[in-house]
Length: 528
Image (cartoon, rainbow, N blue to C red):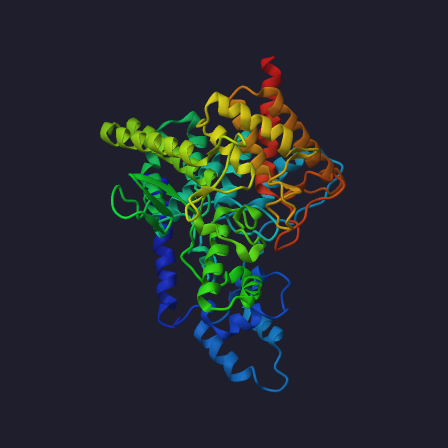
């Protein structure tokens, strides 16, 4: 038996034993308790994520009983109760050192060790989904692995020849698919109701650049993930949404972001709960919660991209929207499954997935391209129309080479004339106060745009974006000694803003894209 598979099976056995030890005493989830609700609605912790990441010292049923029996007693202090009964078990890793003297790229290379985590210990009642192999965390408040972040992080790891940890990242995601059935948003049990943008096939593609056998090795997991995303797809039958699939009729199927929950997110309980208080019914509140959760599944949490006609976060309608970038990712997944099955020698499966990819490519062109703007938009299947928002997600068909040369030229013009700012590309054109809107720019979107432009020969335009983005990264690093999660690309005197939490440092995908851009620029220089 191969070493990686043996390690996975052994880890699954250990985790199963640990869970079995606590099954009889654990009668309810922490998120169902009055203790949880009272803590999250209090001001004990500034960040709602702090509490759900702590590890209880006793089983949840016992803690709930003790809380209910004592909470009304004179002198009871909720904060003291929490500090006495919960602890932080995951303070591993080295503190991030501020260094404004050294070279930014050397700093990034040294940061991998700070952001690296060893296989997880298993603690009863912990929210952590334990992983069997080494991995890289994003940084800041994000001390567990996150799905789509990891692809962009891996591109930097591969530039730095950190091939072993890049491989172990893929093995961890394969483990999650094998054990859970899909890759959750992040490795916490409160993320088990949703996934994130499906980049697993791109991760496999990245590490398979020097070894095509890896396509076949991870074929079972890529197939399982595809089945998760396509659950409910119908060739015929009644049109409509089923989980992550929307059947459009006439044999056409596209995908949406969807979370199975309809309660406030545990890691952002107070924010979601308070936002919904002005709604008139429980059903409206539950729909808002599902839309907020589904926006989190998109990775773009939050953005005016998901707003309805009334505007504002409370109008979020993610589950009504077919996102252009998600469907491009599913197209690539189908293409990769065709390639992997071909390498395996399964001609029938290769043909099947190739046909699925070509069909989806046609549907993407039919539903997401806007002749009027010369750009790709999302599509609202409830309204049966494209959404009016211009967002940087519209570059994704260039990244996956779906656009025609004529479309690519129009997208290029929009990117350079509208989205390009002093520090790189802005995410949307709306200044809503949400973090996935103006004035912020994000590393993964710069990566998609730059490589999309390069795919169609727009080298000078790609170089302008890379140089502006890296100059901003270097400026902020010189001033702070840190790599940030996001950047203000409009006002270079500021860092960034918006969102549910303060600006984070670390930072996995920013590090990966910076190293990737540096290599691309060097390669372009050598080729001239």
